[in-house]
Length: 112
Image 1 (spheres, rainbow, N blue to C red):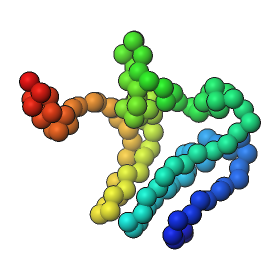
Image 2: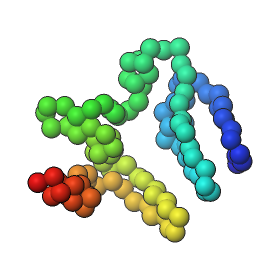
Image 3: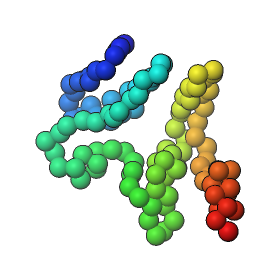
Image 4: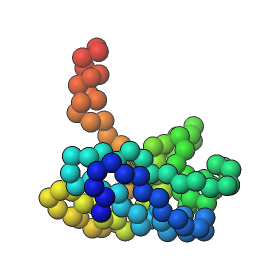
């Protein structure tokens, strides 16, 4: 538990990054703000990214999506837990579909 303004440092080996990323939960239960989660390594960025079991890069011309939808589509079949302030749901990622939000459609209509 952290209260007030704080920076927390955790030490772990490079070989443990995958497990840390899979199990770390950063949650604000009050009126605070989570600034960032990062880690330092002596390995070059390309080598660090190669250790992550999925790609987080931008979309490509062959139809692969970038961003969160792109990451989630690579994790199809994975067990997940989604927690909100009111409830928790568990399950598996079956499919990913991008849909414009209502506010996106409203912006488009207003520009027309």
